[in-house]
Length: 456
Image (cartoon, rainbow, N blue to C red; front, side):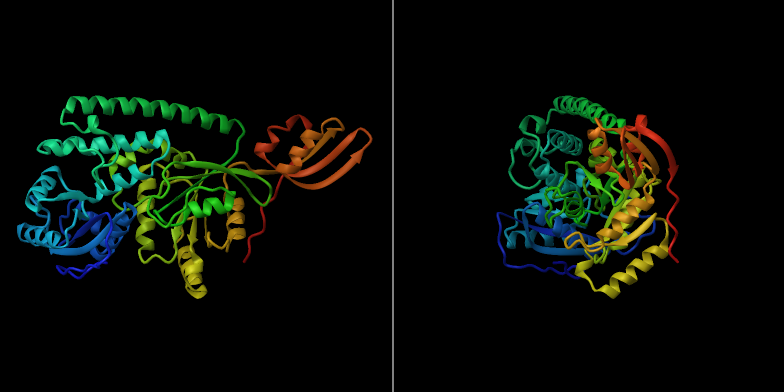
């Protein structure tokens, strides 16, 4: 859908809302600002292609794209007065509902562009906020999205007039209702304070839930990765769950936690969290901090990557940057190269060798969440690298009236030996720490499981 510099491309499909995309290709990187630096990792064409995917996730049809090459950003209109006139003519010709810019626009730039183009103007941040508003399902998710939207809108109240009072008029207008979008800053400030207070309660509730989980020391795994890398599909396949998994960006927002059984029968908790993306609005990172704590509290992170994506390395770098911002950079990582079924075997092996050679990860595996390819390797890698809940070889003695405890051991540990005696049952098993703490009174002896020999 992208086009060469300063040239347009479009198709004839129609939908309820149509838009034209405008990107910026900065020829000079010297002295680039923070917003300009967003283009460092991606080419302008790559960035605009990603924006088209975001627009599709929001339910819009892209009827034209333009990339403007400049030496620097225009402080008033981003792309310059001449290009604004060109965009205006093209948007009118295509009867576009709005113009979408692949940058974060300042409040003054957005006002200037809306006045000059005589139509709605959205930026990348507002589009992502809209997608989050569409997909939030739980009360927590809705609170977080509303807080992020209001923080984004607050500095843009001046000069917006009646537009700030519209209700659900299309993409970029979903979310909080009219009373939250009035131009009265005091009332919006009060609403923001209320949302923060409610989210503090959510965080307290989540802390209590986490403490209950950690009462039995189960290790936790967090899925993290670029949006649309296949995290939810992998989560469903490993835990036999039914989390929404679509080929759309940010299909799932609300965290889900399920139990995963490893080859040793050790049980761990796995959480599926919101996907990351280049230029994720800071208001969203701040608002979703309570949700993203599942990542910061995890014993290990499974960093899921689309192995066939042309921007794979840049996407990995973006996820690592956000993990660092969340203070989770030091958490052990397994790099999970997903969607191997979509590329050839030789190419997958070459990428695997390259990523293993790069280092910095506890382990690297190639899988396909859609077909189950590589799942055994992934489970073994988790077993090998998991820093919590270590395995022990333990001997237990159970009375004949303690069948429930014996059954619990059979369910959650690997049985090595069993001997039936007149007074009870003696069982030797490989048991994780989380099981041992519940059966301590039945132990007769224990020994650490020696590490498996490393393959050469």
